[in-house]
Length: 456
Image (cartoon, rainbow, N blue to C red):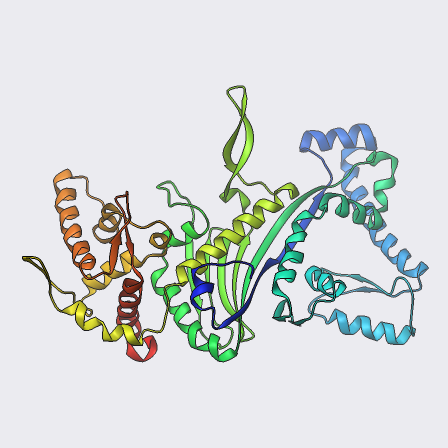
C-alpha cells in the first residue's frame, strides 16, 4: 500500500489497495525577463524596435507558433484541429486513424489543453494489470509496483524534458534575438490524491456517510490548518471554509478551503475513497532550505516556491496532508456498540472516596466539551487544559478568571479520565482521547446533531 496509517489498519478488511500520485500538474514556462527594466532593455537593445511596436511584434510571434504547428501537421499529412469546450479527444483520434488507414508518424495536431496519463502508460509498458475509469484506477493487480512507478515521477528530469518539448513546438527559440534562451518552468497547480480502493461498493457505502458527517461536524478551521502543516496565527489573514455537498450518491464530497489551497474527500465511482490536496499558493507552506544566516549556511524554514525544483516539496507536503486527514478519520467506526455504553457515561462514577458526576448526552454544554476534545488537531498531538478552556470559554484578560475557568475545565476532564475516555500523555501536560473515548463521544456527537437514524 502507498501508506500505512491508523485508517488503513483499522479498515484493512475492507481495503484492497491504496495508491498515491499526482492527479494533476500544470507547468508553466516563462522566458526569463526579470521585470519591466529587463524587458525594456531587451526591446531597446536586442530587438532594436520602438517600444510601441512591441505588442504588434508579439502578436506576429504568436502567429508564427500557430503557423509552425499547422506546417508540422501539413508536412506529415495530418489534420490540424482547434478544439474549444468539451470534446472526446480519444474518439476524435480513433476516427482520424480509421480514415487514414494505418498511418505512421504524426497522426494529428490538436490545439487544446490536454492532460497526460503518465502512470497508466508506465503500467502498460511494464505489463501491469489495472482497470481505469476516467482519472482513477479502480483495480490494481500489483499495488506495490504501481506505487513505485508513481514515485518515479518525482525523479524525471523535468526541466530538460520540458525544454526539449518547448524547442519542438516553438521555432522562435532558434532566432538570433532570443540568444539561446530557455524557459523558466514553474508549477502553476499541483493536485495530489490518495486513493483508498475498497473491496466492494457496499463496504464503502456503509462507511462513507459516517466519514462525511464526522468531517463536517468535528473538523474545525484549526484542524484544516493542522492537516496542511500549519497553526492558526493571530495575524492569519484569509478564509477557512468547509463545503459539504450530499446532493448525489455516489459523488457526495466535502471540501475544506484554506485561502486558495484545499483538501477534498469524495467517493469515486462508489468503490474508491479519494483524499486530495490541491496547492495553488505554495508560499503558504514552510519547507526546510539551506540559507545563509550570519555568514554561515544553515537549514531554515522558508516559504515554498513555485519553481519546478520544488516538485518533491509539493509531493511531501500534499502527501503528508492526506495522511493527517486519514489519521483524523480513523476514529470513525460503527457506533452501535457505543450507544450501549452511553448509560455508563450518564451514571456517576466513584473512585476511592470521591464521586464524579455523569454527563448528559442531550446537554449542549457537555456535547461542546466532547467536540472540543475530539477536534482533529488534538488527534495529532493531544491537548492541554488551556486549549480546551479557550475553545469552550474564550480568552480572559483577568488572571483570577483564567485560574477559576482552568480549575472548572480540569474537573470536567477528570470526569472523562475516570471513565477511560481520555488518558494522560506520559511526560507531558497533555491529554489524548482513548479508542473508547472516540467511539463513545463520537457516537454522542453524531446522535446530538443527526439523530439516531442517521448516526447509526
